[in-house]
Image 1 (cartoon, rainbow, N blue to C red):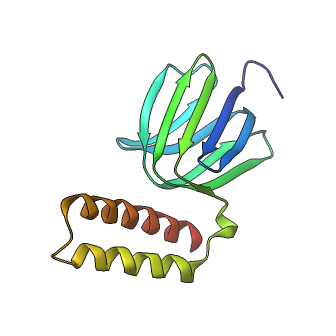
Image 2: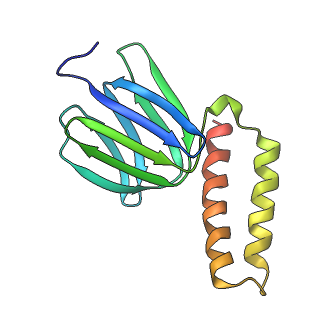
Image 3: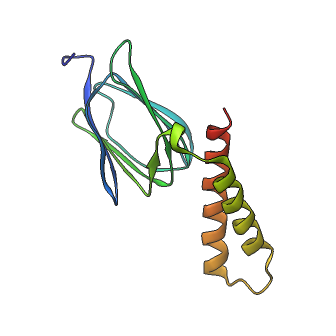
Length: 137
């Protein structure tokens, strides 16, 4: 379905390529809010927050991943998404996520936690909270 209504999308994590191909629409969340990308979108560079990443690859097919923090770059009808992790919603385990949430909350509640460790715990809590919402939807 290549043409004027599609654009190239690449989703990458440290583990490797998650998706590479054409898409009709990309939907995600930046630090300033929700964003939808269509073909010929203006150039953008944005930090991403944990959410459900949606790629409409055709009129009848949409691919989804639970995305962690990352970056989005759109330029010349190409979108590149660099994420700490991208997990298909069906592969999320509520029990594991609940454990991760408890761990992050405990680290935040610990008064001896340094500033850098506190920031990591806050990011971890933001990620696991978003992933729990996706897993329970």
